[in-house]
Image (tube, rainbow, N blue to C red; front, top):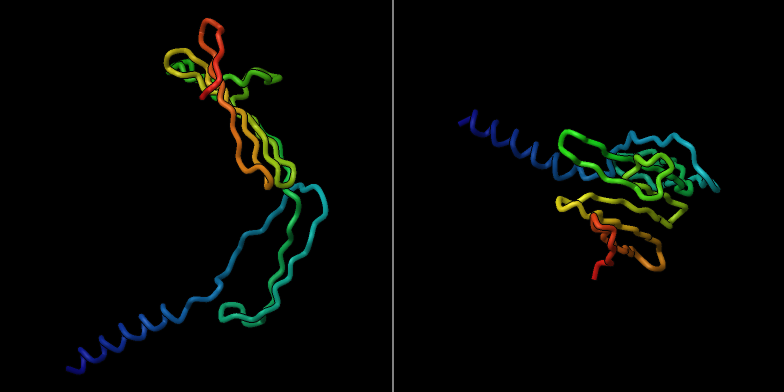
Length: 144
């Protein structure tokens, strides 16, 4: 009987501990890298259960990047080609300036048709994409 009560007390204390532990948690994420634009310091001073001293410090900067990558696999024939690539090997290209993102990617489909997707996204217009298909004979058509 005493053993059953002891087990019940242990389970109850564990359950209450889990329910009570709904704090903000800890984050070990630290950003280090090149940024553009003004860097703003963000301070949060309200104490919480998980952060009793109430001091949190972070930095926010304007996101700005430009990248591209490509795929070439002669064994499987998987190859996409970025039409405007300087080196001819980039399959996906994207750039971001603040909250505006633009880019394009291409996919070589099984029938030899090249699918070209160009997209933009911003706070005003949302996400917009245009899709174009280029057949092996060179004829083009836009997606409907």
